[in-house]
Length: 299
Figure (cartoon, rainbow, N blue to C red):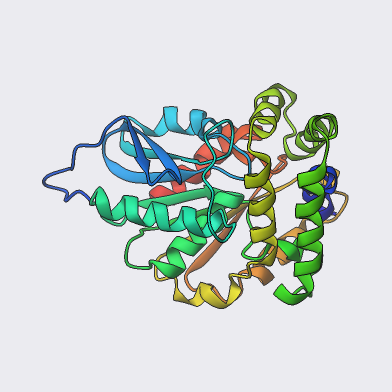
């Protein structure tokens, strides 16, 4: 099923292992915010913040960025500890929530006015948190193949309490995996998350070069964080873009229902399914994804 397809990849690895419009503020090529994120800025125009997913590099946005930077100012986020970037320890062992606060501070410090947020996977949860916890700082949100509570992929009746033991077991198993196990299973994971063989080596390398503790803590946090009670606080339009492929082994209507049920409490929401893709939609179906982003930016 759809959930099994995503979790076969992620789970296998874990099992073993505002400027004002009149006066834009100058932004350096690379801005580091408290070490939690770094931001690369490209182009000029309407501000868009692009947030990659679990153990991913901001390079996953390269194709989209090449299409948008002539008319938009892009802020490409890199989460510390992922894809070879230096890890940063958090006193509470969190990754997602500190990333949210770092991006919120970045928006404030750079005086960005209601930037558009596009986030994939873990980056999608970051985008949702930004919208719910900093509703006056963001513009439209695009959530790419992400759920507000990741454990719903395992169990549609999950709660934070029932998710915690499984999340802890996954975290602990990931921390104790041997390098050989982690590397072999990273290859297996990406084969299930990216349909296009040509893009897999870079994704595998990003995962292998990610900090083990950061990955383990991030997955634990995702699995025990249920954002559904917070979704009603989001004030701006939200579009959820998600993948489907017949190889998932279930009907597309079941995937549609899973996403709609997860976001039922979100006001002003729309959905767009992109067929013929696994989890990395921007890499598997770059033309269809770029078209979806264009329609999102120009409703």
